[in-house]
Length: 132
Image 1: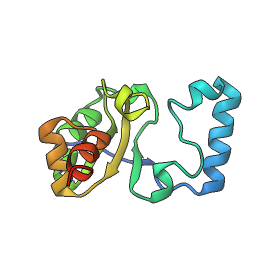
Image 2: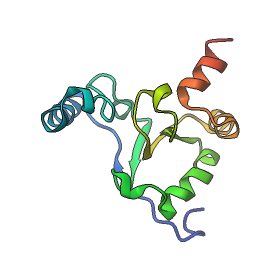
Image 3: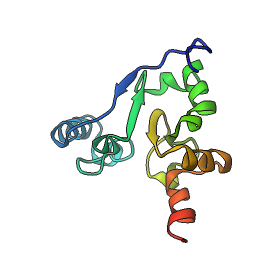
């Protein structure tokens, strides 16, 4: 589907080992301090990258925001079971800043419900999983 729309997507960062996440997070803490690092990087043992269910697409910074690739993903990723993990205006719900490049696989059925209802994963979980 992306080829038909002349879109190029590359995996910039998918699975990360525990040790790699320790180093990455520690580097962010050295650069920006713990308080700032905690809003854009998970501590080792809490990173979705360690699950193998998420990936960062193309460019891991705000230059990906509103790019043709980012816009295509926002409109189409759910069709393939992926969600934008840290959506715009959901920072207080997710605990992380908006990341236009960070996608997580949740399955087609769940992704469609989340897309249709503009839900973050936390909102989906609270409504559909905890209330069963």
